[in-house]
Length: 225
Image 1 (cartoon, rainbow, N blue to C red):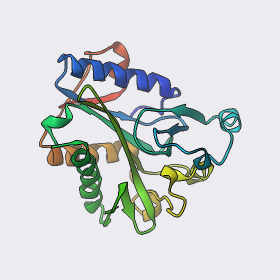
Image 2 (image 1 turned 180 degrees about the vertical axis):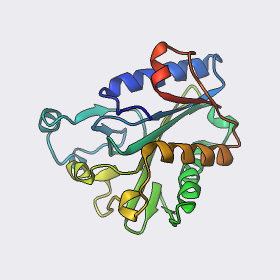
Image 3 (image 1 turned 120 degrees about the vertical axis):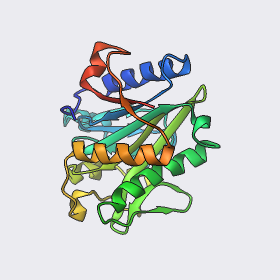
């Protein structure tokens, strides 16, 4: 895993280039991993009440704020949060977007079972929970039948940064991390375990992707489906 990217916009630009490549058939599909510098992303369902600190104060404190096209409300990404963004033709893997979301959740559930954690879903809500709080946020978009965005797994972030938002707009729900559950792993190790579970759930053989979109991606983590 590379050091956290200082610029969310740079990572988003890379994801868009991967999306174009998949749409036009240059790539069959890709899975992009990121570990961002502190950033709060506001999805299509964002409500002003979910942001508890002004954007100006956050940015002065070194936390970027970005409006994004995924579903969901406010989420936090930063060091210690693994972001996985599959870029794939959704109908090749799922009957519809709802099933695709459940498959992403299933990936985390299976991965965490290997850590001895019993994760679960909540009816009517996207994401993965433990009894202590939400462990993984899920929010996706589909453009020209190809997916964007994905999910964020809290590995070992600074949990105080979540206090700036109502995570996912769920005021009565807490958040947790693998570290808070006594699972002390690096983001790189969690990435490897996610990749194995994703391959199993999606029935996809993954190979490293380098040198296809730009020189920049050689410093990232992309996998070809």
